[in-house]
Length: 227
Image (cartoon, rainbow, N blue to C red; front, side):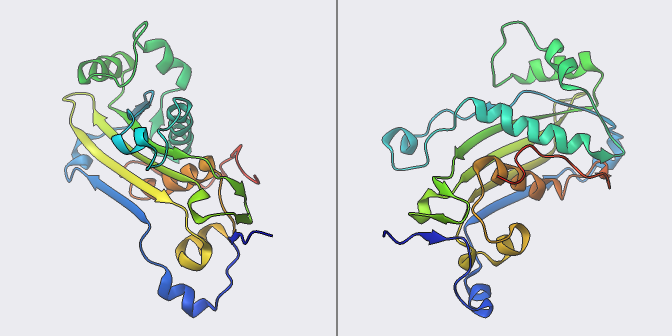
């Protein structure tokens, strides 16, 4: 039988702690004046996927994300922002109705400001997905470490009045085995996530430093739970 990379830790905990470093990139930036802007109403606009890089085209990097990844990651952020107290998130169907006929993504800044103004939003959230690779294997084991899910994106909260980004979140992760990632083990348990579950976790990470509203105490439902 071919050895499999297991999510379950197989080494003592003190050795896991030594190995738990690197592998994930996360950065959040917030405009120091954001409290002065009094933003309450937010619209989450359609996300886009980055065009393939040279590495993706030549096959030595994670494959370019499918177009559907933009909608999936956008819906994750919409749901999580909607679950925050202190802000109002415009319903998706209202946003869709305000989109220009036949428009594609990514949107221009002029379009972003126009749509936000039409919706009466103080700010709009836009995003790009650069990496979105599905897990190849089960939640308890993979044939190779590189078969784990991988996700990367950039999201921006843009003030409608002047088009200035007031908050930016960037995240990239290729999930590592639990014996190399103590924080991931403690947060997610000893399992390999699907790419959608990893995107959920990634969104949670960047939204921990989201400056508007506060997380609701109401439990958040997730269609990807238990996979």
